[in-house]
Image: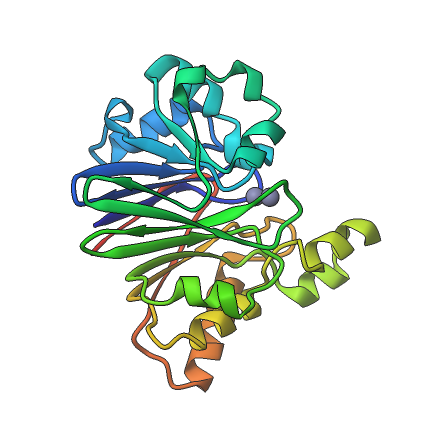
Length: 253
Ligand SMILES: [Zn+2]
Ligand SMILES: [Zn+2]
C-alpha cells in the first residue's frame, strides 16, 4: 500500500492511495494540474486513477474536480447531498458522477464512507480496505464512539490535527470563526486527535497529521502534542508524519 498526501490544509486537500492494484484519490482540493504533477513526482499518472472520493463540498476539497473529470474522465464518488451542494455540480460530466451511500467495491478494494460531524451537507471520512487498510478522516468537530470505531484497524491513518486550542483562542480570528472551529461541527484539535488514536484497540502503524491550520497551529507543535499524549499513555508503536500544504508526504506499507 502506498499513501501520499499530495496536499493538506485549508488551501487544498488531496490524498492518493494505491492498494491491491487500485489507484484512488480522496478529495481533489488542489488544481488538476498540481494533482498531475504531484502524482508524477511519486511515479503515478493521473490517467490511471480509478476514482476520486469526495469527503464534502467545501472548496478546499473539490477545487480541482471539474478539470479532473472533464480532462481526464476520472470517476467521482460521494454522497448524493454532497454532489448537490457542490458549487461546481452542474459543470461535472454526468457520466463521471457516482452517488454512494455507504460503500462501493472496486474489485478487491472496498471503500466505505462514514459520517463525520462537520458543517457541510453530508460529510464523510473514508475507509479503504483490501489486503491492508487506510483511513482518511479530516474536517470533524469531535470524535465520538461510532467514529472511533471507524478508525480501528487502519494500518495507515490520515487524521486531522487542525489546531492547538490555546493558539486558536489567543489568535486573531474573530470570535464567530473561533466558535465555529471549536464547535461540534468544526475542526479537530491536536490533542483530541491524539486522544482518539490513543483510545484505539488497534492503532495505526503510520499516522499522518493532516489539515493543519496555518494560523492556529505549527507543524512541530502538532507533532509534540500528539507525541506527548502518546508518551503519557506509554504508546511508542505509532510512526508520526507531518503533511504539508505545499508538498507531498508519501508513506509505503
Ligand atoms: Zn470543511
Ligand atoms: Zn477542509
